[in-house]
Structures are given as C-alpha cells and as structure tokens.
Image 1 (cartoon, rainbow, N blue to C red):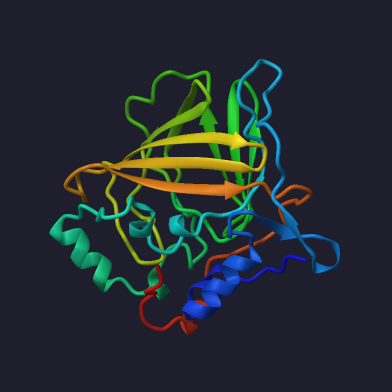
Image 2: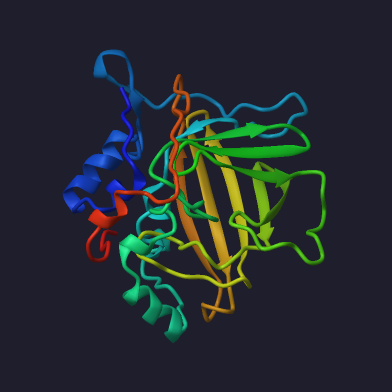
Length: 259
C-alpha cells in the first residue's frame, strides 16, 4: 500500500531515508508499486499501445524520476556538468531547502517532478499531465495549436504545444515565471526559459524522456536532461492537498545535498 507524506517532510530526510522514499514510490526500474499484501509487482511487458488514430498511446499512471526531483545535474549524460552562469551557481549554493517554493506548496514547474506518481491523459487535441503530489495540479499540452501566444502571461507551467515526430511526443514550452526551482538543490532559471521535451513509450511498461533546457538568462548554453518512468498498472492517483502556510517548513534545516 502506498502512503503519503508531505513534500516538505520528504526533503528534510537524510540520504538513506531518501533512498527508502524512492523505493516506496516505485522509482527503481523494473519494479511497480506494491500490490495486495505488500507484494511488489513487475513492470508490465509487451508492445507499446497505439491510440485509435494510430498515434503512440502514452496514457497511464507513471512513476516519478528522482533525477528530475533532487538534483538535475545527475540527469545529464556521464561527464557533463551544468553550464551555469556565475550568478546562478552562487544562488544555488545560497538557497536553503525551507525556501523551496515546492516545499511551500507551490507548483513544481517544468520539467521538475514531485516524488509521487503522475498520470498522462491523452486525446487528439489535448494531452494533460495530472500530478498527485504537491498541490494535486495539472499541466496542459495543446496538440492542435502550432504557435505560442505572442506575449504569454508568465506562469508556473508555461504555455505548452505538442506534436508527434514518429514515436515521440515533442512538447515545446515557453512563458514561464522565474519563481520555481528546478530541483531540491535550488538550481534557478529565468523567464527566458525554453523547454523542449521528448516522450517515447519504448514498450508497454516504460516511458523514456528528455528535456532540453535553453535559458540564456541563467545558463551559458542549452543542456539536456534524461529520465524514465515505469507504468504503475492498477494504481490510481491519491488525493493529496498541500496548502500555503505549510507548518512543516519550519522543521527543514540547512540545504538538501542529495543527488
């Protein structure tokens, strides 16, 4: 049975506890959520499904990707480092976990994830990501629109338009505010942020994705994050309400240093 903890509590754990948390929420490849009696189920196998119109069907409940949660530098290819501008690197070092907007019940932004399952709902004109964690929020990807608004109102999730390139769903997002952190480590961004994501369902039980970050306000060049999720077959999202004025934040001391 899956249990719920506040995100602020989660980021106050030590490294060992963090590992236990990841195991609890099915982050480990090849393992799904607990079934009846606490038995862990294998990830479903088989061919990736298609929708009625022949497009890749990405719908389902998916596990979180820990490298999109704790420290995005771990999501890079081996040997790569984040191309941070000096001010962004300094700010990352100075930020304390108690000040993380996500710990204070604000949206995670893009491409950050919360340490809880999430769902993809798919139709020809609109794809929606539903998030169990944090504020039980959602993100919309408009499939029928070809361009972004000329002057988008800066928001937490930005403006996202999508299309398919072969087996890959490609999402182009702009129009972000500069309030969310990329991760618990405190990596920043600016309103110049432009994110290109590619999602591919390699088989029935696995979702592979990348997120290319282009933010000339905080980074010296674009960089690409790599992640994957496993299908949580038979699971549903739990209701989780996180409200501002979170009383647990006062217990978060210091800076999160996990990778």
